[in-house]
Image 1: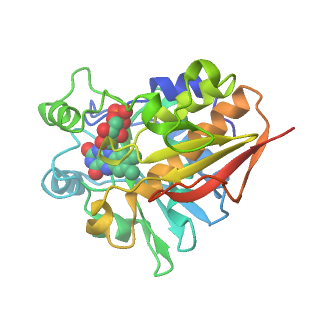
Image 2: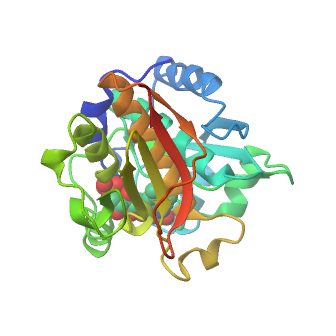
Length: 282
Ligand SMILES: Cc1cc2nc3c(=O)[nH]c(=O)nc-3n(C[C@H](O)[C@H](O)[C@H](O)COP(=O)(O)O)c2cc1C
């Protein structure tokens, strides 16, 4: 199932931590479930599964204190998902979950990636997580409240959520250190912009991209120590999957054909970790 107008949807998406408490009607829930049923693989092929988790009244009450540590207000419905453990499992999860988030956005629903402020054990149980799977993150889903809660505003302020790194810090031409100017990026400019404005854990934006000939290489610039708290779950690798998702959706909307490939970038990327490349069709 396709996401209508991906670029516009990517621009419109914003984390929502304050919901108005209305339940979703069954038709909308069924649309989400139908989308999940087809959203079972990312670019690296690790199996994905997503479910809607509807909390009971008692669980919603518990949620206030436990579930999302009070960060999320007024939501009782969550998108939770699992990926089978494997190479690049986190990237595949980020890719698939961001597709869900964008699809929910097209239905006028609010969402918020939660990888840190959630009761992982409680949600893993509800999802029936197996020993071979990981549940990197979840998201509440519902109708946004008219006003953001104080916690929501504080969170946005702390994470500087309305800001993004400028082009010259994340996009490069030929080699790191040589910035790719937006004016010189051609049709790729709009696609890279879709990556730049994407969500990331604590808004760290760990993606770095080097254009080399017809290839676009993706590297991960990890924040030292950042992923220590979440065990096997690596949120910055999930961020990378989000970048790949936004890139692929924007490229396809703009008619830039290509595919994901493992390449051997010619440049020296220092401490950045190479992840994958988009090879543009000739
Ligand atoms: C993988 C991931 C994990 C996140 N975890 C949390 C979280 O635990 N709690 C939270 O309130 N926001 C979380 N966020 C939301 C980010 O803080 C948010 O995306 C970022 O600040 C940019 O703001 P925006 O989404 O409104 O554009 C997470 C985002 C991502 C991508």
